[in-house]
Length: 313
Ligand SMILES: Cc1cc2nc3c(=O)[nH]c(=O)nc-3n(C[C@H](O)[C@H](O)[C@H](O)COP(=O)(O)O)c2cc1C
Image (cartoon, rainbow, N blue to C red; front, side, top):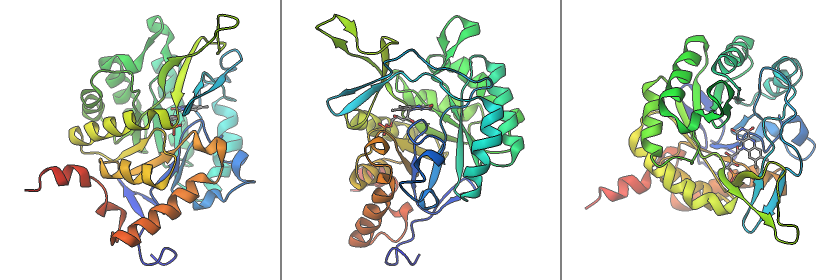
């Protein structure tokens, strides 16, 4: 209450209190420090870190990004400095910002996910884990956890065994049954769901007949994916009863409100951060004005309105 003209922007996600419902997406905000020169990280609802793996990882060969109409392709891969340095250098800084932190966990094997999750949980510096299951499972010959419900469910239950903090699973849109996938994750113990990750995509330079990305294919993000994300959040919200963080092409407070109305409890701004590092704070302000105008006193008044409307006579 207070700063936003009488509307209460706080949301509670299974015991984690956020000062507002707007987070920043994994991989689009560094680990917070990189952005602190341009905006006040403390004002965010939460930060989702870049994926952390056990060992340092160089990521994919360049070029790694390509701008497309209404979005971008990226194939950064899992580039990061590894768990040890993340725990020593980045997580304490973020924790000192007193902003809830979701640590995005990735790995090449199930054992690696479990190890990273255990150490992050033990550090006491993170609010929650976000399992990025769209990574190749090398031991299974390049299979993605995101494409195999049973494998992903096993991963979630093993991570749950070692984690003292809530475990969110980040869903890939690369499935024909997003609601069924989300349901399986919750049955395996997931405390929350975040969606969507990028959509597998590709672009070619016709002059050279070569793919635009060194990795050939990459993930599409930005406004182009937003309607897909809205549909998927809408489906998942009907299937599960855990907190949902909705993301995918949020470019304005309107996109955020739309995401809340189809059932997300909070939202995350991604690709837009590259255009304006402070954009998420603009989304917060826009949501607050909208709530004031519509008479929504708390964020929950907006959540799920589309579903509730469907049941009206
Ligand atoms: C450059 C870049 C790097 C990303 N890195 C990660 C990552 O490390 N882990 C992850 O789960 N998602 C990652 N994502 C996906 C985003 O977190 C987000 O789910 C997706 O981009 C959709 O949101 P947007 O359209 O608002 O960007 C990355 C996206 C981009 C554009």
